[in-house]
Length: 310
Image (cartoon, rainbow, N blue to C red; front, side):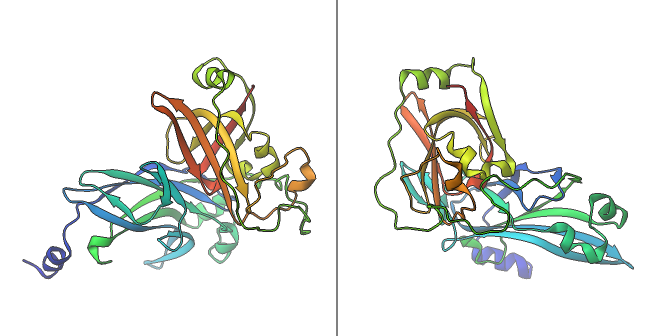
């Protein structure tokens, strides 16, 4: 038995396999964020997932030497993670116990990037110039498995195609570079419980019927437009997130923003220059057991959300 085989036998061979369920490719070159969903499947033994790391990077080869430049990372662990629903209660995402042959998916939200600026010295200010200079792009997902003792954490890399997009206009809750005086811009202590969602006959009919009309929709970074998103609060929407491949219909609720539950979406001036430090949203739909609810603590989970004509 070789040296590395001996180490593997000491820490245990997990047999964990990774697969990308969804990757944002082609990726719009001037966007500050790239998203992906990675699926983790356990082998014959149960394992514990204690974190993930997503890395977006560029590569080029100069005089026979390969160079790599990290453009952004997303690291999640027990000290830095959201919450999710397990066994009927909301708990931290990590640690995550995975049974033998079981699988679970995690999202990467690699954000706050300025790729053209980062690649300026390489001549990568645009997709065309990046291609001309031999620059290629990759996303790497790494899963921290407790049983490997950090020695053999599985990784999966995929090349990313890019395309030229026009930089988006400022979101409607932003007002130039001037800090806002929004009543929701300060963080307060969270009090009270999330509002219980009621499935009225009208809501149930709209959710279960395929005969519906879309009033308006938000896609990608547009989801961060809080005032527009607020128009969907307490109403039936069609939503597509990074976990589920198919869009679902249900009732959308904004539970709190920065600890505020008394949310008033009638005045757009309240939503200018709001910095979101904490947030909770819910999506619920009826099923044969009563109802199912998905709870999010980040807007970056949502790929598209559309308000249905009520």
